[in-house]
Amino acid sequence: MSQDERQTLLELYKDLRVADVRDGMDWNMMHQYGSVHHSIRPLFPARVVGIARTSRYMPYEQSIPHMSPDEYTEWVAWYYREVSKNPGFAEIEDGDFVCVDQSGVSVGILGSNNSLAYYSKGARAFMTNGGVRDTDELILQQVPVWSQFVSQGMNQGRIRFDAKDVPISIGGAVIRPGDMIVADGDGVIVVPRNIAHEVAKYAHQEFSNDKSGRRKLYEQLGWELDHTVA
Ligand SMILES: O=C([O-])CC(=O)C(=O)O
Ligand SMILES: [Mg+2]
Image 1 (cartoon, rainbow, N blue to C red):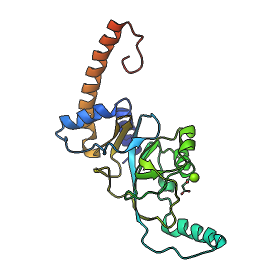
Image 2: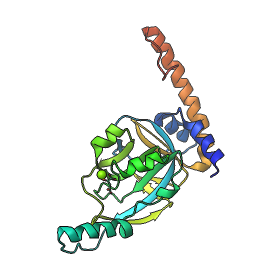
Image 3: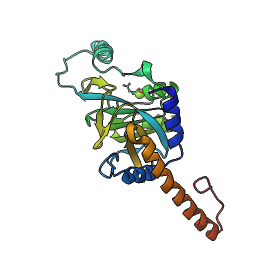
Image 4: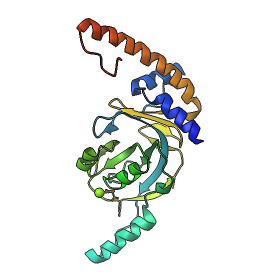
């Protein structure tokens, strides 16, 4: 996708809520598609629009040799180099939404260090069907994550890298590289790129109906208008 296309899509979706995008999908007869399972939740309140960058990990099936702690230090370095590298770091682009299918394994592939490195290269947020760790720092750093759960452990002996920039599945939704991802307190929704403009059109229709309806109610209630109705 060209930079222009990416910027156009990010701009088109920037104000939309998950609920609006859900409606936009329904208006395109995509009722059964897009919504990531409700068990995948934000670590802290945030709303992010981004473009999917995908990777997939599988459970590690080898046995773990008995080692001294010093041998283990070397083994971990080898493991991260050869078995569970953090993929796609060099390719991260501004506006990416990093989506990691970790096959539901309880491991903190994403922590406060690597996610911040991705964030500093332009990644806007992260989603995984497994765990994240260092959650207190992730909250402090305000690096947005939607995950299935929290996990304490590192990768070694638990998970191996399988593929990057491939279609993956998270929470029952298929995510292809380049799809639009919208995430907020209602969870996450995925919009296939080939229908992204059509979905946005009807999502905006519903969004503006909602805004004007609530604005009238705010006025009746004598409330000050906020950004959700202005
Ligand atoms: O080291 C890891 O694999 C994950 C982690 O805790 C971090 O990046 O902070
Ligand atoms: Mg860490």
